[in-house]
Length: 454
Image 1 (cartoon, rainbow, N blue to C red):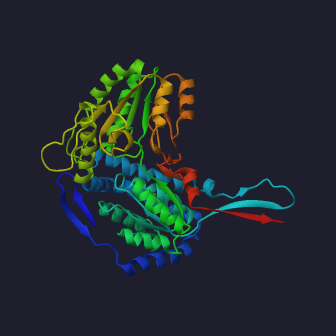
Image 2 (cartoon, one colour):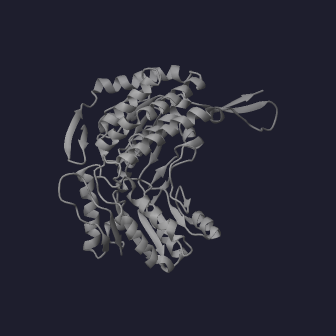
Image 3 (spheres, helix red, strand yellow):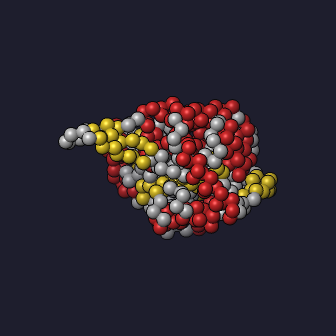
């Protein structure tokens, strides 16, 4: 069911009907027809559509941010920041497109010349999550509209108004009819689209479970796919860490967006020499992330996206405590309505607990105490996930060496991983495959066509 459900109350605000079978077929055929013209539109004209999309995100920032706050509970200041990030992504591709699309001349043996052209491949399906309803769409849509691909966009069922707002912006920006189509599709309809010969690729940001299902369907139908799945990102605090920087960063990295971030610092791995001081500082920082009304500018910690999501987080915490983990802060569902859960801090988590292996998609920090840097790296890599990470140490040689030894897609040295339009985003292991943003994101659904000239 596609519906806006206010996470501050749990009440249904508005429902939206799903597609019919005929509408699903029409969406596929219409975007396929639109692709023939859009892919042959001048790149400068496609870039101009992206530039207008950036402008309209900024012009409507208050309305768009309020929609994110309503539909998934994001504090309004964080929602504004997300809309601005989305705008910067559209603007980036609208600005640097000549260098991204220019032909690459190859140095070849023999006579003649050879070059590689970067071209579109056809209609694509994007399956997007709710935790960043504008940013997640932008990082898939912007490079592919620039390439000349057309877009079918299935957003998360709990943010339909955000989905419609993005479609309206694409239309207002001059994207021709059926170049961008929002779809309130069912799982069965998604499977039908993936199987269609008209569809050429799929990008999913979501859970491991969703990734396995979509990846299997894509493989069965020989479709290119990009999967950005979960994460259990380690944040390593090494013996020479600057704790004035590390403790606030760790709290911000864990509690931003109520911990509902794939690259959230879910595991803080602290070496023995700085354990006591770091924990003391971290708890003081965590205590400042108090629950509030997400519509208020001063609120840092709003509700989770749904009561079901909150209850899942609470169950993971309860399991850890029941099996011997230490609770330092939070850990109790507050009274009243809504999907609220407090900033929570655990330590002493061991392998028999759910919190050790599972991603906790909520405001729960797990602190691990290890002897030294080598032990920190071993523990960091002992995870089915490999998305992002952070390393804090003032020893630059140790920082670089540690980064090289982490089995992840992204590492921040003395900083958190934050998305930026020009830098690739993605992971390894169960965190998925493929990259988004920058040149790497543009190349995922591009035909790198070789032309050999005698």
